[in-house]
Image 1 (cartoon, rainbow, N blue to C red):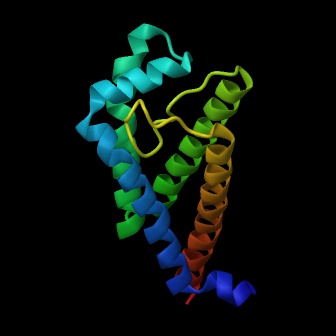
Image 2 (cartoon, rainbow, N blue to C red):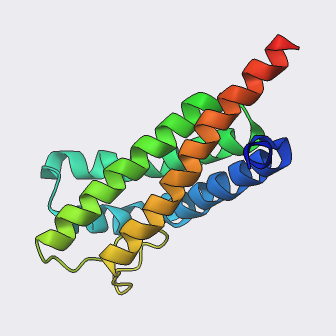
Length: 149
């Protein structure tokens, strides 16, 4: 099993999947920043003065981290950013669900009509986080092995 997890092709495919998901998730937000700002507002987390800047910066962080993960540039930094964002997303979704607020999560679309099952979205994020943890640890191990040889 350990050889399977250490397989460079499996690691690359995992980077493609997670990086691709983050690039895909960023696209609609980059194209429609005003709609995404409304979604961020609906979570009722941030003070109003931070909503617009978050709605502009977050999608670009997702895009750049996803792209860097795919091409293998600064992999450790990009996967740490992605994993950190996933944790933030899970907390935001969980708190919003616990407060009984039904929002469009803004995960992959800025459509306000796309109400989400927030619990399902948390499980999606958990799956992506598991993939991200795998990438973090085994990318590091693969680099250490290349250096040692």
